View 1 (tube, rainbow, N blue to C red):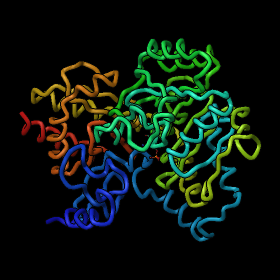
View 2: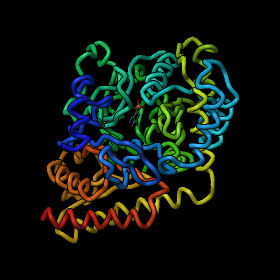
View 3: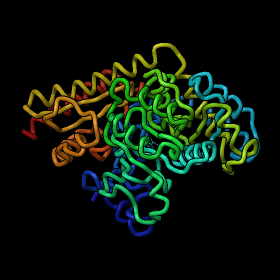
View 4: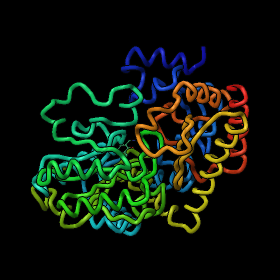
Length: 427
Ligand code: PMP
């Protein structure tokens, strides 16, 4: 028995399913989850001491690689001053200014402690501001586990075969409308049906919770125009894409301006953080300046702000995003080429530092229906083959992969050699 297996058995006794977040349980691929001891650069190390090239990156935030000296130093310096005050700090001001500089649509920002809190708060604000109850999301997009957003959701909800969840009253869920990603007509139809009732559209600007599905040209711009026509707010959920797809997030990359943006783990450099922000007139509508209530005892935590700021500052150096995109392309195209060499059909998507691998005959994957038709059984075999070869991918066919700047030639070559070997065995 490996140490991970032993720990998993123990964990199941005292933690539901042995994990503190469902996708970690390996339900999407079968087998025992790796228990992780430490991580450094492009590598994570499991409890049995085996090293893996890591394409999960703590689900997105580790853009500089794990345990980056600049972030570690910032955290250690902050720790020396105390862990939490529950009072304003200069660090929060610096963070807000940095976010505004990098993402200009964010005129004002409020920090929270997770992506779920960010989207939940942004939705409440949009509803309060517009005085409308309905919201529109897309099938296969995941925005955290707030009640109104756990309807036809992606990520773990999809992996577990539970598009929505018990415990959410029908009276709440009925206010959540779902449209098809990359299908503007499906959005227009809902607005025509409820012209005065939809408070906002919330969208993943590159869907990363149904594997990785970028927006078709004009899709995000079309959402902007529809929101303008119907006086609804556009919320771009950049929990995954923010500071990963480009310095200005996916909104900067695709040139679309939302009313509100939600940010998550990436903004904390690995610490538990989130944020929501946007138009000043909308943000002024939350407490204490406005009537919509939103709060958090540990929000803007100084350790998290220090870690996040250190990362954001490093990401502002020139050439970072070009390098990240180039590495990502090499990995995604390299894996696709290795599959083709062994007669296995595969499509890949990639934008900035995120990518998706699809076992499909389709030349490209642009929507949720196509994602669900991909061959999950083939993915599982590939997944465990790669794991055996020392490559750690997200343990689900419905999650995106993430590169870091620490992924160098050696790690990429090792990944492609592993893929070649695994595909050869899958023929
Ligand atoms: N929005 C998106 C786009 C996400 O990918 C996630 C989580 N991966 C969330 C929101 C929720 O964030 P958290 O898990 O930190 O609550």
